[in-house]
Length: 454
Image (cartoon, rainbow, N blue to C red):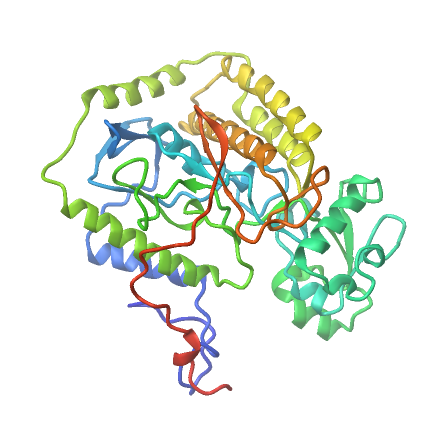
């Protein structure tokens, strides 16, 4: 990327894919620089509450200022959702606070788009849950490859029950399911975890081999939990066919990143994926905009968006949005974790109905912190919608997919699984997943440009 000096380049060496490591901050920095060069207006303290749609065509977005509550109306020929996924609706997650609460799903669904596979998120093998300030930090697979051992509360190396040959080096989904099973059957810690034992490793090996995943916690037992949806792996819920490669339910609506969808493939490089798919979505949005003959407006849609915000600002109910968000996270962790069954999913939907009923008596209190409480209320709406979509689609899914398993529906997943498509009116429905078409440019193997190995 122009203006980027990737980290990891060795002095005096020619850059190649084997010696250059492009990081997330590199991309953020390049994006900010390019935005300033193009004089792109940025509204970092505006919370978008609704996409504005007229007769199936998006024409902008409405939101409010987090500091003073001012209304913001943004007109646009096309809208690209890059708002993250919904991993925060589970209890243990690598997401930062107040993000990935399902905003992309709510915005797309309320605009009239269908959502694909909202029940599928990538559950990492394990992530830290203790100490509190490190909770949610994903533990890289390099920890077990370096010699880390998984133990339950009896001190047993429990992987002997699940893969006696490969043990901790088994497939990620096997390790995840094994850890989850140990916890569910009462062999986890009081905090609902298992232990990753590293203290038997030499200091140099445990530190240098795992420093990116365990930080300063080497030479100790890291309390871990498999129930950690990892935002490093994009959740595949998305506006149906809104990536620019196929017609969309809502004209002018596109998505990228964790909002874009598609089952996770562990061998993918997430940063390269974002760059590639971002270019595809951006190009599709530009091409769509060029076909328009003039701006589109709908005063009725704008008034409805504004009225919704004003109604919530004066809400004075007894229930707190953040408390109800915690309730959603508990029910999703308990009923829609790594291993699922019909009884648990139905119980989750029943509990979600109770939470939904309480949202009608929500209280929003504006104070010196600004309008953050109003933002939490919209985050709650997003979490409830995302949870319902995930639970309903999980009920309809025929068999296992990625790291998700149905204890009441054993068996291998079909080679080309059906997609689960959800909308507020039809709930979850299976749709045949056809092979991609319309790709005119062949993919180029990155190894062609890698140069000699070093």
